[in-house]
Image (tube, rainbow, N blue to C red):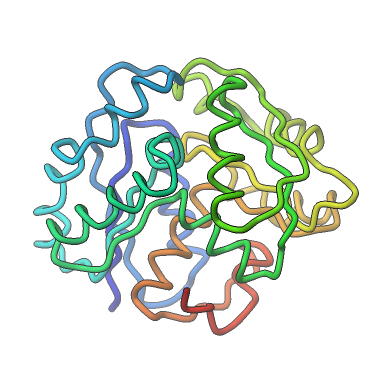
Length: 243
């Protein structure tokens, strides 16, 4: 049994994780600890506070006792708003506190794009323009070319958590570009796991979504290789690239 730990902010799309666990179809357990969100707002100042060390470290002991081999901060915006260097420091602090390998969803997107060979990506972000732009900057800092960033302008994670299939598909279509090799949908508050195969079929290219890449990143840290086509193209390439 491989146990993987996730620090998930609040309650929005956490039910994606048991769905992923079922699709993995192997001896892998996904353990979630919910972190304090504070104010639910897609604002840079609030998002910076959400990823502060004291909020993240509160849940670490529970994951350690559960036997987690790796931990991922399961929040995209709570990582990239700190910039590339700040997000690295955030992960280093988390790893030191947890005593295990650590990463975040922001880095997971960069690593996953490299894994599928997507150097040019299009972004469909739920966030307002300013926050979405910071994600584009983060991806560029990670060496990716961003063909464009489409912003849906939502104000809260709660709003995003209520989105269904129609909204997710509309976001992906609006973001897609002919020269993009993959479409990225950040925000772990967004339910996407049930739609991954259909999204990729419609767009004709890989689609990377927040909860999907978060779990893939934890598997990468634990050096586990799982083929799970129901989770999209990212999970049909073995072995994972060790970045």
